[in-house]
Image 1 (tube, rainbow, N blue to C red):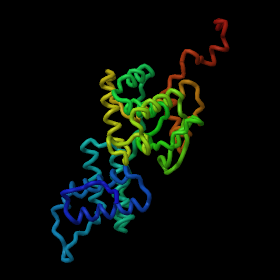
Image 2: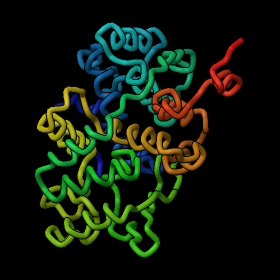
Image 3: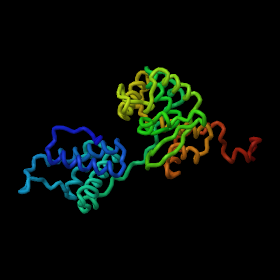
Image 4: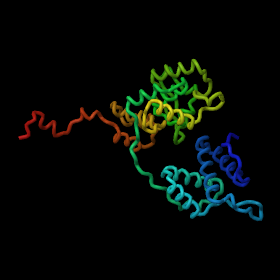
Length: 305
């Protein structure tokens, strides 16, 4: 079974994580979700002193966490600078473990989620995008960056693209089982198609569009993409902390500034709710020079008397 690699753990914890991973496989969770959830649960047990417990009479350890233990762990995460989304992700992992693996819902059922702060997306200007794209060192990294910005794909979606997902005849890319386990189609720009063809001429991918190094049987990891995006931004002299998700934000914002309908942007991004997409209206500069106040039209001649 293709499960995340773990080593040096107490046998009971390794067994617990293996059981959890197996349950996630059966439920069709993505490999990235499995990796993240397993890591959160591992950190919880190792960081809460569970590895020091002595086995009971039956040789095992009861892994069911108490309500206070989970609360204290989440409080620890917040006090050490972790974000609300990170803490909520940790809680989701612990809830999955207790509900689906341990069949013990009570300890985590009453723990509230942290209320996420609504912050505006950070975006790059079109000039910064040009500098960023020009700083990519290899055909592969160049192709990845062009795909990310031109389609608004999530980094995990771009990493999992297969050669058969690229429909050059129709000018589309098929995104399979994106967030929420939904398929959708996104645009395939002629410019990006040219970049992909040049990359394919050199690298010759045959299954995954972006394989993991020399391992053709595996796709590149989101973390590897994040690392290259960050390094490319530094080479371009961009002082902001640039992430693949910032390219997604920039894609949506630049489309909106160009007058693209918000509903269409929602479909391209794969948002379930339009309210998620609306946030880009607070970031987009709708060419303010062309927008006038209603009162200006009432007094076009300039006479307010």
